[in-house]
Length: 273
DNA sequence: AGTGTATCCTGCAGGC
DNA sequence: TGCCTGCAGGATACAC
Image 1 (cartoon, rainbow, N blue to C red):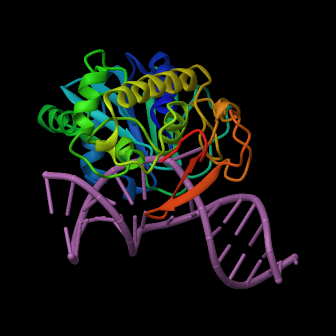
Image 2 (cartoon, chains in turn brown, cyan, orange):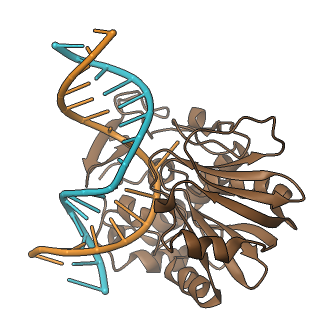
């Protein structure tokens, strides 16, 4: 669910609350969220200090004392909710709660439980970083490099964009939105994009991600920031979830297609094959 | 190696 | 009102 703009919003909010605090204890209600097991997870976070809070792709990352990294993947419905004092109500579907010192609690809530929380050592963290593609805002990612990266894949550009090994942080919403803004049909083979297409797509992607971050992300249904509030970028969406509705650019009905049991959206006039 | 598919799980909306 | 079906922002294991 949450893609780069949503996780970036969460990271910016949490940084203020978490940096410098110590994890006094954790409450583990849903251990299926913890691939390393409850005991190992508890051991890995308890009494660690949170030194930094950031994001890599769609994952929220906290640097802990002792050179380890807490990595949170939100899956489809994961939320990180800050509880500053005991008067704030405890949210639904809480799986993990971090009790912090001097004060505050951080809840991980997730109704579908596709999310995962894991603590990695330096080598595990390095392996994860290497396995992910570049950040869309990486200044080293030029139009030419992006075009080169596409050139050996005949899969649809829509699917390519969502593969985290190719590019980190893009999911279904922003893949569709960027393709519409760049006027590229989502089913075109990635390798069929010209240098000019690739450059336009990278520019559109950066623009839509930047705007979405400014709006606090997109809330279709489940996404909430750390205060439990929705993001407002849905009103700026041009195609995602708008099958049958008129294209905001040319007015003809947008089309919803299905591939691998996932929906994609495009304008047949603005995005010719 | 790249590509497509099924699957994990719950909740909600829409049709009847 | 209630039952059924389809659908959902992700990621991975698998078969070809």
